[in-house]
Image 1 (cartoon, one colour):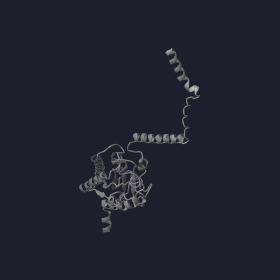
Image 2 (tube, one colour):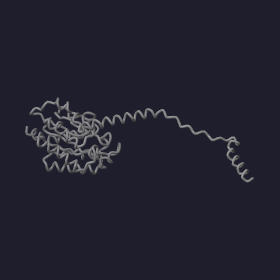
Image 3 (cartoon, helix red, strand yellow):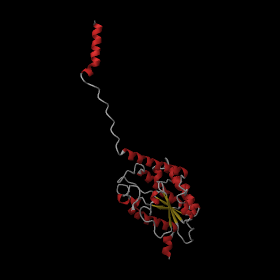
Image 4 (tube, helix red, strand yellow):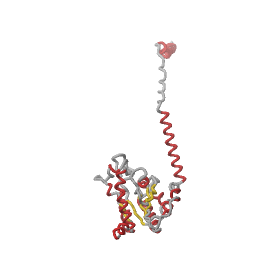
Length: 273
């Protein structure tokens, strides 16, 4: 009898929801896909494809020797009286007169900057982009992208070694060497100091200045002229906290001209005349 009662209770319990007219709620349908998902996915794919293409190009031509190959071939040898000067550098040089500022109108100066480059890349292309152009002087502005590890981690000693190697190559080929300080950075517009710590910029600049004093090179001090009271790049001289704007290049231009005159002795020659 007890077994029968237990069985009856079990049947009632299992049939309870049905007897009370209750059913399990249907599963909540997934929200419809947002209309913006497809465009966003397409944009991500496009961005990835562009990044992969850039990386493939870098692997095929790490130093970007092809960038100026045609221009170099079409550049005639300078006349004996021509004071040709080559500017070797990264995006700060590359953008000079191309995106911002004026690049020495009327002067036989050659821009051989390549955006994003580090000192080992510049060292590889130093012969075709500087030596073979037979300038009287070279202005080298390099190192900021090394600090941000654009082509991998580097010590300050390694960066200094690459700059010294470029200077030595120039000197042995009769080219006057002008080594520029790194320009300061700031976080006023977007974060920059994390990737390029100001103390490392100062340390590298101190070495560059010391090297110039010991090896008869001309030191070009952009840094001091572009620094504000907070030891940062003046906000009015940049559009992103790293690269100069028109006003920034207006500060840099006369400083570069004075350094070139000093290296070539043109100021003294003009005074004698």
